[in-house]
Length: 406
Image (cartoon, rainbow, N blue to C red; front, side):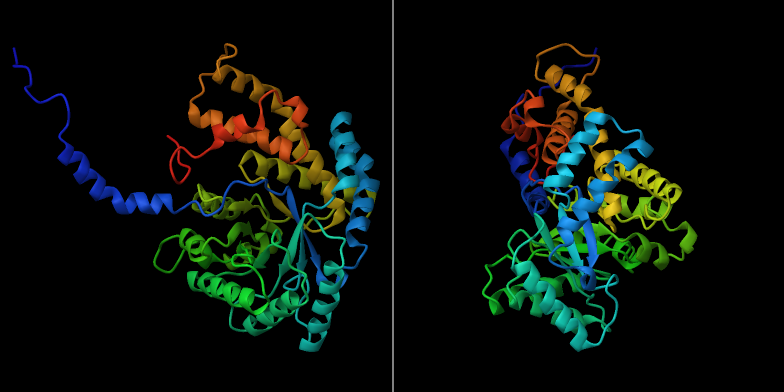
C-alpha cells in the first residue's frame, strides 16, 4: 500500500505570489478590455443620403412605415398584440438611430456642393427634429477620400450639430493605423470646436477583408477597438463592400452568405466583453413597388432580422422606411415569443420554482440580458417582468474584468 503524502495542506505563499507575477500582464490586459459601460442598444440604424434629408424626414418616415404596417403584418402573419405595440412605436419613435450619409449613399460631388449640403443638413439637425441617436458617415480615411472626409466632419462640428449621444461612422477601415488616426482627429476636433474630452465617439465599419484578417495573419479588430482609446462604440458590418472585397458575385451578396457569417463571428469575438456593439449589415431588397414585390421584400427582411437576432446581432442597418414595419415586427416577435420561458428559467435559477433546466451563472446572465433587451427595445413593458431591473443588471454584471464567464 502506497504511503500517504506528507505535503502540507496549504500551498506556500511563494507559489501564489509567483503565479500572480506571471499573470500580471494578462490580468491587466483583461481588465482593460471593457471600454464602455452597458447601455441600451438601438434596434437599428437607418441610413439616409444627405441630399435626401430634410426637416420633415423623421416624421415622414414614421408616417410611411405606419401606413404600411397592416399590409406588412398580414404578409408576415403577425400577432395582433405585437402589431399594436409596433404601431405605438412607429408613432412615438420610428427611428432609433439615424445616420446621415455623406459616403457611398451620397457619392462624389464637387467640394462646393458637398460643403453646401453639410451646412444645410447641419443647420436642420441643430434646429431640432432629431432621432434619439444619430450622426454622420463621412468619407473614409483612405488616401483618395481622406481630405474630403475630414473637411465634411470639420464643417459638421463647426455648425454645432453634434451631441454627446451621437456617433460618427468611420467607413472602409483597412488598418489599425486608421483607427489611431481617427482617435487623433477626434481629440484635435474636440479642442478646435470646444467639445468635451471624449465627446466624439465613432463606429468602425467592417467592410474590407483587411479589417477581418490582417497581412500578418491575425485579426486586427481587437487592436482597432483598443486603438480607439475608448471612443469606439460599435462594429458595423458592411454587407456589400465586404462581399465585393472577397470576390462574391452581386447576385450572391447577402447577410446570410457564408463570408458574412464568418466576418460577423470575428466581429462578435473581438467585441466580447468590451461594451462595443456589433451591428449587422443591410438588406438591399426593398419592400417597394407592387404588392407582390412588397411582400417578397418584407418576408426576406423579417427572416434576415430574425436570423440575426438568433445569432446575437441585435442591431442592423435599414435603408428605407418601408423596412421599419418588418424590422419591428420581427424584433418584437422574437423577444415576446421567448419571454415566458426566459422568466420561468430565471425564477428557477433564483430559487423560486423547480425547472427541467439546470442553468449555470453564464446562462442566467444571458436570460437576464434577453429580458433587459426586450424591455429596452419596447417589445415588452417593464410591468410584465417580475424582476427589478437592478437585479437583472446584477446578473449580467461581468464575472471577470472583461466580462468573461465559464
